[in-house]
Image 1 (cartoon, rainbow, N blue to C red):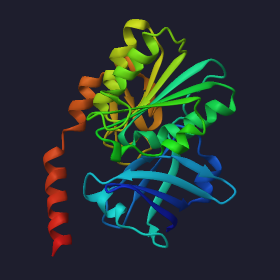
Image 2: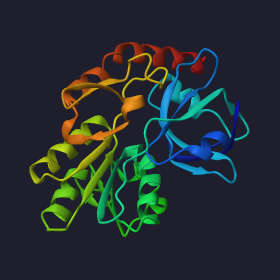
Image 3: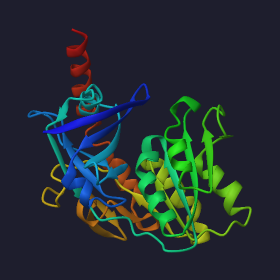
Length: 278
């Protein structure tokens, strides 16, 4: 069992947890993830590590309640425990040692870019952050991101904070079109957002990395559930990634695979909500 030492509500559906997991905290690097199981009958879900504190032996994760398992996790309070917390898994993010990197977080994708931005700053790399959400109330962890960035640009679909528009609008209009030198872009968030970032940077041959989060079961490369196509070859996000060259990812396939069990996921979530309501 892995004790929750801190719970922080970021939005009505987004929660931050600091969990006692000393072995994971001692080894985890930016870009890696853990596989979590809430209880004996629960499914295993991958969650990217948002921060670690090796001295305290804690790992920080952020979850968004979009289905049964994430909602079960979101109901846990500080002092309670998570049954399984396996990791660190996946390969660390390949980080530059110099230059200018733009990190982009969409929605709760801001959480996994935090350790990446921090590590880049420690290497002496200039970091600019772009954060997008549907509305101002859904922007999260901006103060934490600002600690590692020279500038953080925000955008919202409704214009309630920062630029009205998408992260790709900010990237192109405020940085690329202005001639700002960029050595690398790292984008994490919804699959459609990462695909849009890839298509925005492709004409400029601007190196772009994304973190894929397909359906995953064991997280060790044995089940094959998280397979994706990168440069025409089959890869497993859990062991070959989760971070890949965005210009080589078959996003159309990744989006289709992400929706394969949408009906079953909705059914499970509806049954769970009915149980909770009763």
